[in-house]
Length: 349
Ligand code: SAH
Image (cartoon, rainbow, N blue to C red; front, side, top):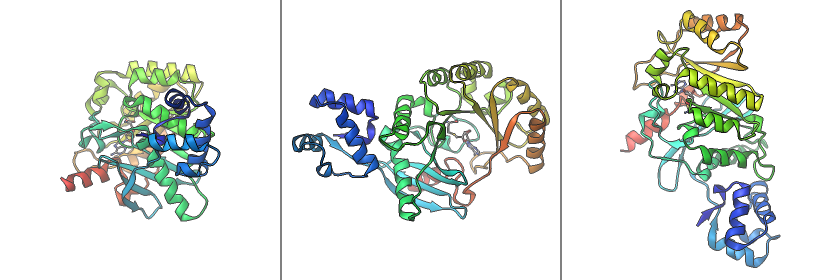
């Protein structure tokens, strides 16, 4: 049985052609029923012939994952533990900014990147997520917004939940295409961001996609010595290789890149680090997002004191670097990267 949610439009067109010799426009009709009118019963798709609907029913389902647990923070942030068909749990967050509703989605179950500071890596990767499982996270959040009755929807997507999106590249790209499609969720490409720890060959591939979506790089250190200590991926692709790929991306897309930089006490938050960071990104069309570290019980890293964050920020600002400090959301509900699932899965086993 195929799940409609696993297919972006072109792939559904091809599949319908291949298995039923049907014309491509039928896929568009199905998309509109499912995503625009939210009709999930093939029998109600009245502009499709009865015979075709019967064939669809025999071969396709329209199935979302389910909500296992929902936590709501004082600031309105919602964190979901989502249960997949095989009973695996993944997490998804809805963050409410003034400019819109942001879905932070997971791309894998667990993660093998072993970044020392990150709670997601506490659980080894068991598998990559299917398109329907990444998309299902957004659909469930849309259902919650619909229930609230304010006519709101998810307006922005960040692929920054658990997992390394560029190790599930094809499914993440298809997910993006469905989000962006005028026949489906119609979320503007510029409202969609993918964050990577630095899988260099995939950054180049992403640059070649011809998309208008955004790229964020988890940099977190201004030199190889510190970066290799906290992010093992740096031993495969060092900073200079990473920067070459970023420059390629910028040249190909004419867009800006975001560098995420977690500030961790006594590790990467000194003025000297700020100076090195400035030198590293001078001349690159970038913007730096400083993130006060969210402490994780299972490791020794501490969040940078406020005055260090301030000094670090001021230094970059004075060097004319585009820099912001990310505001924390949902601290009271373990919205810090991977914490909820780690707790839940541990207590279950
Ligand atoms: N694998 C991808 C996306 C998932 S992580 C990546 O590495 O970019 C999303 C972001 O959250 C990354 O920048 C990651 O480094 C950061 N992050 C992980 N743990 C964190 C923590 N405890 N506090 C703050 N940011 C964290």
